[in-house]
Length: 204
Image 1: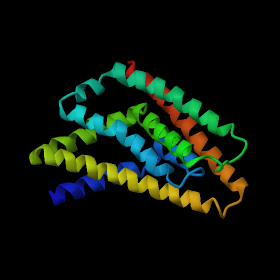
Image 2 (image 1 turned 90 degrees about the vertical axis):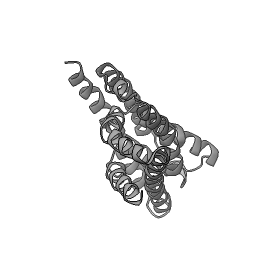
Image 3 (image 1 turned 60 degrees about the vertical axis):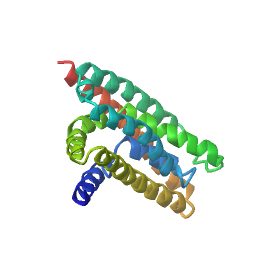
Image 4 (image 1 turned 180 degrees about the vertical axis):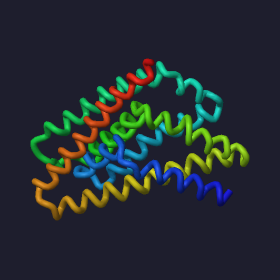
C-alpha cells in the first residue's frame, strides 16, 4: 500500500505541476485571496472525485466517446476564452473583495476549468484508469487512498502557488501584478483556442 501511495503521488504531481487551465485560474484568483488555490482545488475535487467513481464502476468507455470529447472541447474552449477575456479586460488588480466572494468564485473556477477540460478527462480515462485498476488490488481502501493522495497533491500544490502569489503581491508593484494577470488570462484564452482546434481531430 505504501508503494502504491508513492506511485500515485509521483504520477499525480507530474500531472498537477504541468501548467493548464486550473493553474491559470489559480494565478488569476490568487491576488484576491491567499486561499484561492485551496478553494480552486476543492472545486477541482468536486469534479474529479465523482469522475474517479464513474471510471471505477466501468463508465470510462463513455468518456472515450469522440462525440463527448468534441462537445467538451468546443464548450470548454468557448468558456475558457470567455473567462480569459473577462480577466484580460480588468483595468486593475483588486484585492478589495470579501473572502467569501473570492473563495466561492475560486471554487467555481476550479470546477469549471476541470469539467470542461477534455484533456483532464483524457488523463483519467488513460493514466488515471490504470491507477484505478491497480487500486482494485487493495479493494475499496485502495480507491480511497488513490482519491485522497491525488487530491492532496492538487490541494498542496495550488495552495502553495496561491499563498506565494498573494504575499508577493504585497511587495510587487501593481503594474507587475497586472502584467501577470494579463498573462494568466492569455493562458486561459490560449487553452480555450487549443481545445477548440483539437476537437476537430476527433471529428475524423
